[in-house]
Image: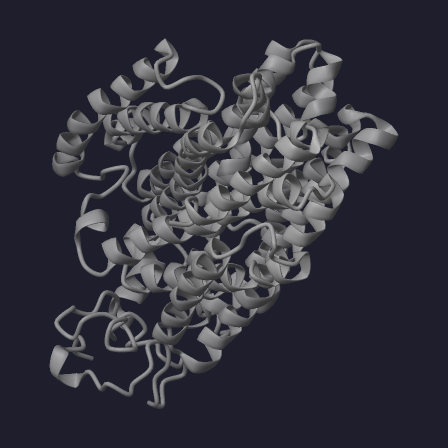
Length: 559
């Protein structure tokens, strides 16, 4: 069968389905249509994977001979339905645990810092986890291409187990921070490798449906981490919040050893007969080092600058300089590398670059809103922490519901563009309505105003993931997945950092104008440092602070 050409593209032909009589619907056109023309990629874009390519890919996996013995299933690649669910159900479970652990710190960090008498180190508890879980994701992708998915995945699960136990038994704040750093490495590997394995096993036509299950576990795990973490810490102690995860992770590690297929991904080292030294030489070690160092420095700058440390602090200045120093050599190395850790065409070629950057800006928007709205409810509406959290839960439920719907819609209809458009329209509506809120906005209405941005994320983000995978070669699935995850995480950090910087500087300006009295500077300082101080002010100053806190976080942070 000849590769698809631009002339054969029908405007009404869906991206992921074929009307032909093939055994696997959409098998020959899964990655040929145009995302922009409502169905896949631009008409001039050549077919990324043909049936011959797919069969070749299976051969590279070392399983072509066995595939004839397996019961064919239209959803999966080279595995039976039973084998798939044995692997995928474990991936879902590991994803849920990883999300639970990643959001746990939001509710239990006060108990940990109080135990070690280290309140000034609170920011580092979440920061180091974020640094390692984000910076190393692209590295996991390339290593799994060389050595196979299974050893990388088992390594990540093992690191996750060991470091979670370390967190539960740490005897000092320094030890605990180090444990969280390595725990981020394990959790990031579990998440990224799980996504890569899913792409190896699921045909792109049906990827959206199974992504819905991942999105559901993502939402449940994140919600449980925030909601149950504090309860566990209050009733059983903060160490139990980590200890309770250990039996589940250990059992899953044992199960994974037996059920995760040995032949997944290119497995270049085995298929090419490379020794360990030869395989290591094929890795983009220089690029990986510069990427990890640069991303870590950038995240450190954005996460701490203007929030924990002033922008003029030596740590912030040095981190920013390190990022700048790493950037140019990294780009030069990636342009020449045979197997770059982050292929530059992903960031410069249509449509991959558009989709990856849309992920960046989408997560930037939703995290800007979710970070600032609790401040609005607590500082402006003077609601409790519990009440504020329940109102934010509406957005989380919207994200879960819409993301699950999106995955099944993509598989059912074979169309991606409708979800992309609807998602980003909801993002625009979400920014507009939240930026219109003030202290006179009823609490119930403010909660409803959070729904559009939640729907925006749920509709747009799964669609961009499937679109990016659909226009990427099979050999680049791993690095595409991890690059997409990296930019999503960077968008989250940018959203929080930029909006926090904007908010703090705007508060200084507006509070200076509105707060009166001889002790105005002290009041401004107290309000900027802690929103609970608003409750302690006299009625006149409280009204002044509420008004400015209501004007600033909603409008400026959503710009």
